[in-house]
Image (cartoon, rainbow, N blue to C red; front, side, top):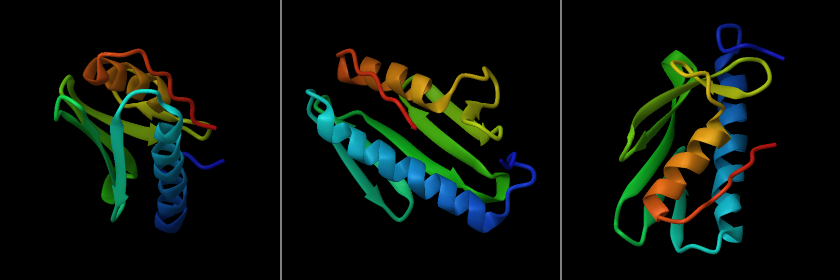
Length: 112
């Protein structure tokens, strides 16, 4: 598997498209009212309290960026999973945490 540094632009886009589609679909199974809208490579999660989490690609850096009330996070592919560039936390773990906080309900997201 490719690390972020060795990943071609087309491979990066393919990987991110899969992640964004998987994340969008995962909110169909959540018992909390969260609107998940994927458009032009940007996944916007809108909560009942009108707060948002934005997940999008940053092609030049080969990263996925997450913007949430708790802050901004950058993820790089390490060959096996997307990991935060500062904490090394996996994308699905961080999203579970920030989405749970903003939804005020426990939500667990798992990426394959």
